[in-house]
Image (cartoon, rainbow, N blue to C red; front, side, top):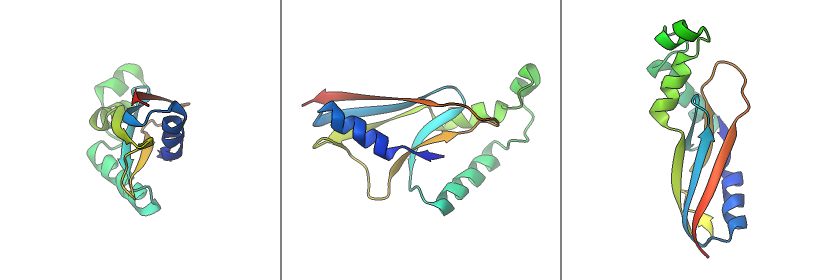
Length: 123
């Protein structure tokens, strides 16, 4: 789980948009974007929760078909979703005090992730 809130704020600020929306999307089928209070205990709670829903040890047809043992990561990503849309007001994303934007990499091997941030609105 990686906190990208600063990157999102920077892109919104650099866009010059004062009022609108920012869409944050991760490219790939085994990662997600969400918001969370990004603190160590909650990050661990989230990991435990996801492991309960779709354990990394679960047998999947995908893993059996492709031999990559990451069917669980596709299931987790599909539950959480690849993107979020956040309102923009006064030139900033509208987030709560303890709300951060995070990338969740569900895969069982290292991957390079790309995040696409698009700001739409008016100056």
